[in-house]
Length: 540
Image (cartoon, rainbow, N blue to C red; front, top):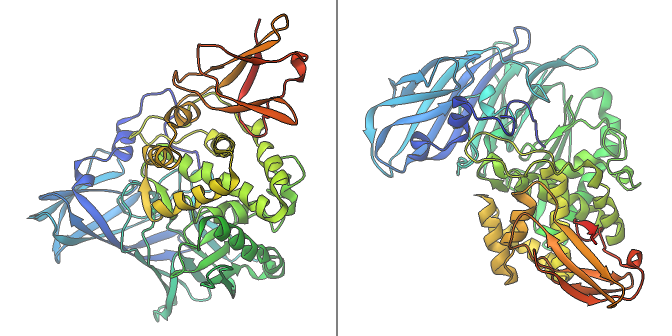
């Protein structure tokens, strides 16, 4: 779920800071992340944090310089390497980026660690606050993070980009005042009384994890648990739920939707991708976020989105939008991750389409198609979904809704539901635990279908306007001519048109007109817009 706070505005030149954050420069590219060990002490009274992050990496080139990020609002205390101080400096005054100069040159293949110590007072910012010191209804501390748009480096030092995830996972140790609990990503390891009024909560992530998915949730949480068995394999997923005391009864009722969600997504895509870490759903004071294995929930324990009919067609009140959408990101966003923020539609377009699959699994295809097409009024078609790469640019919200309707259109192009469901299952399985780009998506679908779908994806993702089916009726000849008006000259998407009950498959192209017989009135020719997200225009 996008944040939309600091990325550059489309049409404006990126700043030097955007290029540093968005690019994959030589001191990022010279190493491969292996592991993070984040240790943090959180003081709810002073509203401060202090700790270290151990960054383990393997060198891909000989070198002694690394690029990492931490907001200048927080203080870098020291950086050590092999027990010795390492030199470091900000890329520029006020920059997040800092460069670490190691005491010696590392060789290709060498595994090493640097430990970054830091402290300070996090700044509340962005749509969800990023690092927020809130209070619950009883006035007790309730502290959460959500930093997808702002970047993880607003609260902890890391390689703040999307391409490289720590392949061996992460350890997260959070110390909080006694009486409070921290819930973070991964599998709970232990809680340890530190003897100074603080307890450390230890979590172990066993999979690669995107830095923006790393989260802490601190409060007087009440915990209950369950187990979900995959209907096909029997494989079990542990379920852990966390809510504040005053919301416990409501949460237990609402969170009962989780097993049905898992049934649906496992049916179409395969087993839950993080069984070693389990699935957690955690109450937070904001709408929600897809933190890996620690899904954040703040939808007021109501169906729909904050109690509203999300797509306006009477279906979304049947389920809790945040549970279904944010949990869908465990498959797309967390297991399959975009390698650059510009390709974020791989997270959001696919996960919005998963909402349709959930509805189809529960209530059938007709309701699913109706639900999905209820998103059309949310689409603006003013900017291309994919912005310029390497610039820290976040796509517009069309990535959610237009992205999902593009996938529904692709389903209609394939025109074989059994094949479609096999395709999306195998597509997900092919790229699970990988960081990919749109080019990877397109190449896979071209190979899978034997079709040239490159113009199709280009038209919907790299251009702003919808393709428009132009129709020209000739009553004297008893024909209708058709062609595509599209930005991509190669766009030649097949589409079914004609009598509502007896549609004819045609393959319009751009520029050239093709014809088919049509003797009925022009207003009776049916274009099934619920199956194909396209414009339509009758021309003289």
